[in-house]
Amino acid sequence: MHGMTSFDDIYDRPDPRAYFTRLAPLSYEIPHHAQAVFRRTVAERADPGLTVLDLCCSYGINAALLNHDLTLADLYAHYTGPEAARLTTAELIEYDKEFYGVRRRPGAVRVIGLDIARHALDYARAVGLLDGVHSDNLEEHVPGPALMAGMADVGLITLTGGASFLSRRTFAALLECAQRPVWVSAFALRTVPYAPIASCLAGFGLTTRTDPDRTYPQRAFTDPEEQRAAVRAVRLAGLDPTGRETDGHYHTALYESRP
Image (cartoon, rainbow, N blue to C red):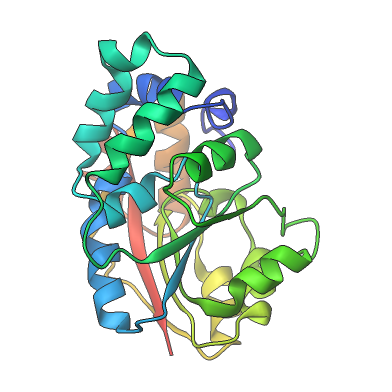
């Protein structure tokens, strides 16, 4: 998105330490808000064979919060603390297998991840956060055979980051592969329109609902220029940035799409 600071250098490291270290001072918090929403949605979906596809999954953070007795604050403390700092990536992976293993929630659901960041995917799979990983870029290519097969049991698609860079092409490609009813639960920045994606989902029989009065802070702006660009974009979208973007944080809206 124009005017938005790039964090590309932390999204595809061999492990998440740089990701959490860079984002901690900016109070990046959207996975915290999504945790309760996604747990509630899984329960409402009421499908014992449910697989969740986390879109733009990065290091598997949403899966960690969905399926483990952990908070986002716990993850910040874990990955920015002195114990993690002294480990190699290989040692951290072994450490994290136990870290997540002992915190696994009863009734944890199967989660697969889709992201173009291959190193992040490999980490999430290695420590047991994701049951399957796919690096298909659906903005540019059709789904490969592995992703098509992986979509067979997907009944819920989740998203907390990346809506700014995705179009209806990605969602259409996924829904065309689906073999059971799929719900979508997505947090999207108010600086970009979600209507094209909602329109695409409507073509697959999904109705999208959002509460325009309820927003969720994503992170603090990196500088005044980024804030000015966000405030302009929100106003161009016909929304009021007062008390939200004007107070120094990106805000998201929750879009829930169901049959």
